[in-house]
Length: 68
Image (cartoon, rainbow, N blue to C red; front, side, top):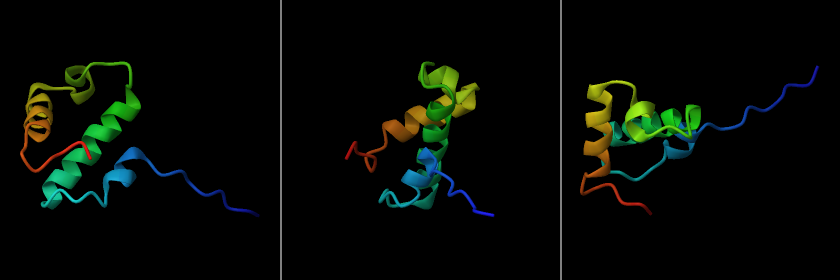
């Protein structure tokens, strides 16, 4: 029986991101997964709760995080 290869998730794509800290890499993966699950929702709705919203905005405003 043939095994089907699984497609990478968005968090897989970010797992090698050069963000200078593994916590930032993990946060990038969480944000990407949330966007993948609910692409038409706003960031606050994707994040789910107030703490996750704050973490998302802190990540996006971090000087080590660039859109490259």
